[in-house]
Length: 248
Image (cartoon, rainbow, N blue to C red; front, side, top):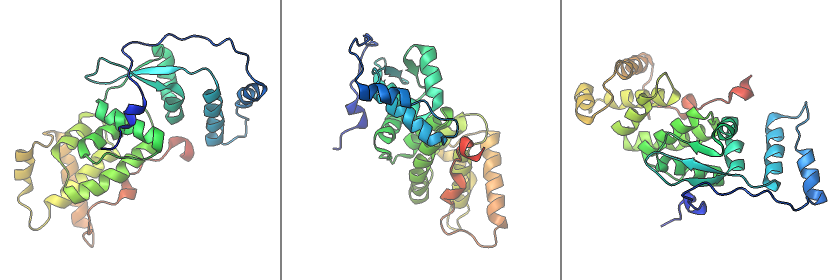
């Protein structure tokens, strides 16, 4: 069995004491800290890299992360979190190095695995859907796209399950995740050999909401208007998230 990414982060029942180091910075460290101030004309990604590199040489500031159903915190280096999203930095400062996430540990583990290795090792649709929603909440498009790149093939091969769809539709407003699920379900439910889609809808526990029902009908109408029915249903490129800063 492969080692969980969270095993690299020891759990702590209470926030650790923060001790300020009295060791004088070496010339190389002082230079790195001073040079991490971004220049006015510096690209955003390069400026962020310089800032994160500087933090690696600064005093460690572990953040105690709490997730749903867990009483024990996950101490995570602050630099990992803020490198993914600026929203984390503001939330950590407000919470005094304590961060509460509205996700289960399974979805958080997907995120930590991506932070450490830039890869997605989970294949279960419900956990992937929840991880995608984590990226939506904290504005992490690269993570969302990495999750979607795994989720789309799973939805095509194993059919879309009801549980991840319920998770997606629990959040208000439209999203690429909802659109992807609706289109793939519409594709599957209009297969010639498939039973009446209303039977599947009622039996398997898909969201009983006006929003979901409307998205399915819209997706079916879109498929019906295509000159040629797609072979696999959905196209990954249609459901990737653009970075707002890159498109500004």
